[in-house]
Length: 223
Image (cartoon, rainbow, N blue to C red):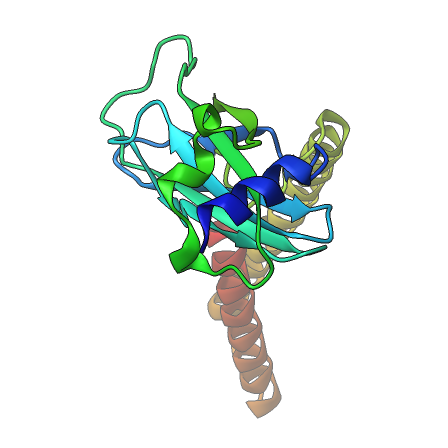
């Protein structure tokens, strides 16, 4: 690419080559974990635009791509990855910054045509610059697996549980009383003479009934 042609192309292009969104990179800070954040470059012109991304802390961040060509009336996404951090700043403040430079490029320019000289203002090139701030934010809270009940719902549930316990207690006492009564009748039957086989059958009936009530009583007591 001819440098003279490139310079003329850049100086003739009006300002406002690209727009950037967002202008602040927010990283949900989590210890010992790489965190990614992205921003979008939008070419507002009818020309090819070359861009380059710089940072004040290159060891801390990885930028992909850190340079490239944005086609006319199109967008390009840039992903910034912050390396895993060992500690969280007490004030959750970050002074790191990014600088996005952009210049007009000749039609048909590709990635291999981008050179450092294109972004040299001293050479007379029209270079647009935009600074991006970095902010730390708290990571999102995981969703609660159980829905939190309101105080009113909790009170209603407690009242219903107390009413159920009271009803079961009364029913258990009634069964105990009935069981005691049948035990007394069984003792009386055992003491009295057997008149016929029918009375013997009646005793078996009471024994079976008492056994069933005993099982039912055991179930209520265990619950």
